[in-house]
Length: 212
Image 1 (tube, rainbow, N blue to C red):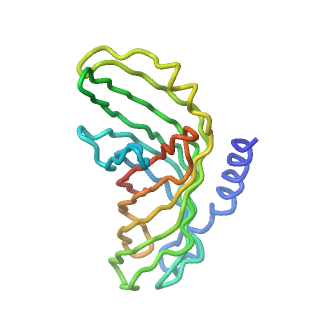
Image 2: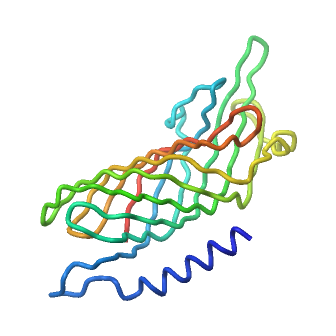
């Protein structure tokens, strides 16, 4: 049901935004729509397992979707994004007896909302700061385990523990506009939803995004 609503909302926004791009010689648009692609480094965080969003080695993923800048003003605007996002982690657990490598890939349909994006209002190049959050619905999850450097095999036990198919969290972005075009963005996302209740396992990622 949630996925159907996403696609219905996406189609409606696409129709409404089809005529909002600025034409040469006209005033800046009040709205903007673009295609967004990006790479991200993804992992988990929890009280019992502190990790960074840049694990070693980096666990690179990708995402793609649509961007909608709304209520565009010289010094601020809002933003909505709808995207297909890959998250997960590549973590090695160690003790005195053995090492176990756990690799996961979580595919989400994700909506990002930045209610406030601030910019200085320069005429050509505009750095910006955005704050907001995200909400995502899990499409598919894959879990594998093995030894470091060895062959990985499916991990049904860990997959069964993934009881939460919904993720949500906070987002902070810094980026660059060329006039009204959001060219480049660096974003951090901190998940708030417990993916494996009651273990407190949450998503965390850092993404580099470009807009077309």
